[in-house]
Image 1 (tube, rainbow, N blue to C red):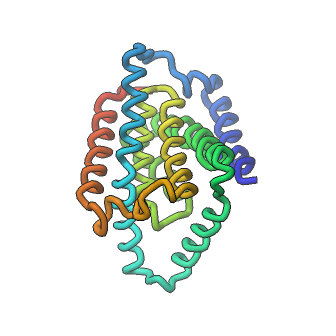
Image 2 (image 1 turned 45 degrees about the vertical axis):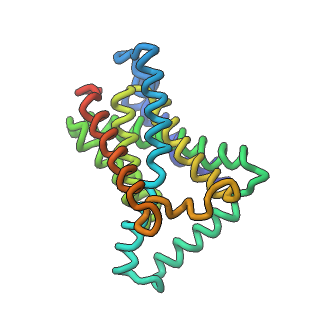
Amino acid sequence: MLTAETVCVFLIPALILLYCIFLKPGDVLFSSRYDHSFEKKIWIFFLVIFIITANLPGINLLSQINTDGLLSILGEDSQSWQNYLRLERLTEELLSPDMLIIDILCMALVPAICEEVFFRGFLQTTAILIFKNRHGAVILIAVIFSILHGDIFNFIPRFALGVFLGYLFLYSRHIIVPILAHALHNTWVVVCSTHQQLFPSDLDTIGTTENLFILGIGSVLILTGATIYLAKKSPLSQ
């Protein structure tokens, strides 16, 4: 059900609008103007794997900062926090160790494909066309990307990921690359949630002020450095 909804809400409208505006969606999503060498494609592939994996402690840290900051204002008795906890419990109930492949397909791969085509392929490309400012477009779409997930307690880490994915698309000029990064991030979340016995019990706190804080700082610096690198190396125009 959720998979069909994601396809209908994000993927299909994005492809239709890309066709209506650009006539050839493939030229936007799979640009051939910046054809990378095989060596560079391998470099991008391993860069994505390293950054997304190394980013896990940083995501925990940013999530803690985001959550603690909001709770200090709203309080744990607020409706927003209670709704967040209910959604977390619902997500945990949907995930099952016996259905790992299906969970990865439905909650990692399909959302990554649909959301990247919509946010980076359609919205970001259109925003650059309208505002003539690629940096402003990447940041704007990252904000929209985070807001539309409806989770204010993880707005900051999702925004940071959105900025990275935006520049990754500009740099690679191939939608498969941010899809790979997004899907890998989602897969880590699914696997860590469904196979907790395979990981340290405190995995979800690694990188926070409570557990190996230095890893969180280093992780955030790695993501920041990678994002700045991609921003500088990405083409000046679409």
